[in-house]
Image (cartoon, rainbow, N blue to C red):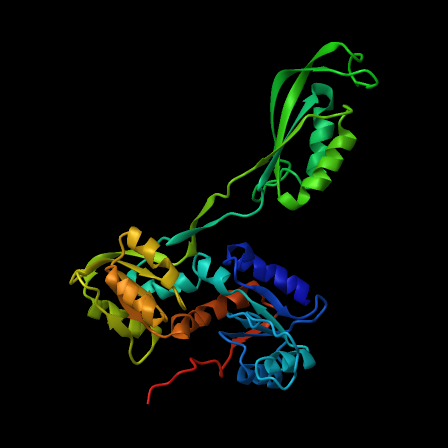
Length: 368
């Protein structure tokens, strides 16, 4: 398979529009025509992991964290921050990152993180992407199908897996052409009345100019009456940032911390009891990596304990002051374990590609 085809499959698994707006997900390095026979999964594309991939003749590194969060102003191949990318480029190693899109999807990193506690709903739901404009045009009945087909061929009318979607309603249109006009129906300077169809079709914002051009070419009027409406995004169920889980049985912070520790396979987790927190918690919220920004929404959803990887000192104090107990397990400890089941998912999705996990990818800190 070529990288462009693999990328298309990856975007079906990890829709990039689900990623946070600040997140530079997707292709980090590579060319459309690169052949991909071997893929390696890692949390970080560290220099050690890149060297492992080169030694194992890997063609594509699926790195959960993007490597270009802060692109360098100058590309010095000896700079340790860019050296992994320099080495990867020199050996035709492509890099692709799903990051917060992987967090948001159903069955992704966040759902894996809350497995010991039950299934949950997003702390902040994701929005659907696609049709975000609606074009409405008024067409004489005899020209309705021609205009509809022209709009559809230009990219209008796609809703999910359905194409050529439209809505029509009959009505009466009136107009008076001024002197010098050439109306398709009637004559200038006389009020005309025409039986018309109100035709509505949705489309992405980027397609609007093409659709309008096609519409005007197919429409019989000199000046078609066109409305363009902006559509609000719809929440996507079971998809988004973080999870809120109603526990089947209320449990203490110690019990919840132990469940997290066992599931994540770490020696210990850090916990903190909030002032006035219940002795046993009924609702837990979680976010992989660093999820402090979701705590206000989690609290509003009824959570009294929050599981994440890491938080800054003042974020911890603020959460505790506001009644949210904490379980902190280390940033990548809340992410890495999901790569094992997802190796099987990816292997099923790409049977022609040999897929494995990195042996050199690990949490950067250790206990002594």
